[in-house]
Length: 355
Image (cartoon, rainbow, N blue to C red):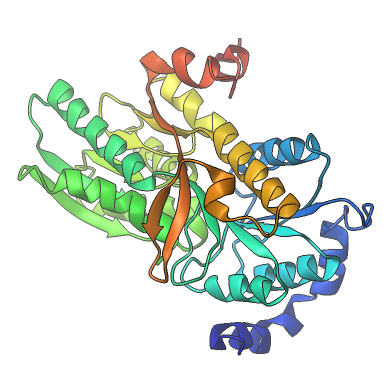
């Protein structure tokens, strides 16, 4: 039986989306040779700059193995993502690689794929309560921990003690990735009695503008006396910094700000002492691992997943223990930019320092 959430999504949203035309425009590779392996790659958004890198690396890796990629992104809209999954299944993808918009309900999308004999590789964000075949992701909890530990070090260096007001700027409400990132932060914050968590706010669609609004309101409420903002991604951190800039506070000497995803504009702000920290969630290992696994599954559909993916861990997503590949995350400060994102080929020195 089709899960109730799937039926509900169809009922309330598809007619309003006008998706027939949209999908025909967004699936340009659908006419690829029918004999080729087809990998569907569906990202939740292209809102953050990093996702252009995910797309290009994944596509190049799949195509280097003689397979085709059918790509789309969902604009953080779960209804749109449902339709896109259905379109990809209609086209005849052999494997679907999915970054869910709504991690709580995307299990219905996996059920839909399984009904047509298509295996699903989770990408970047672990969906909850669904029968995912395999997952490729970064350790989001470790990202949050790195952010909070850097804040502790910053307070020791600038204040002489771990003491002050901290605001946690979360992403999408209920998103499993945002929850994991935040849990890593909170675990560190709770260890220090001198830290006061003045806000723990979620932001629909990971909106930078909403994060700016939150920061502006907090600065008014606390008369600009907030010591640290820790954000779940680069876009949210950018919104916070916009609010701090309006008050003349956008400086690592005054307020600690951490983001994650290492968007170029944020790395530039790290280089210029505006933002204290970014986390580089290395995209190449993530995209390459997902691409390799998807192609292997497509070419050996009857093989055991564990035999195809090699070393892995098992993570309980509320439905089952999902075979999971975890890829690296790296802290980026002003002093480590050259040894991390530059040496790793993510950006050039010219891009960051605008020489």
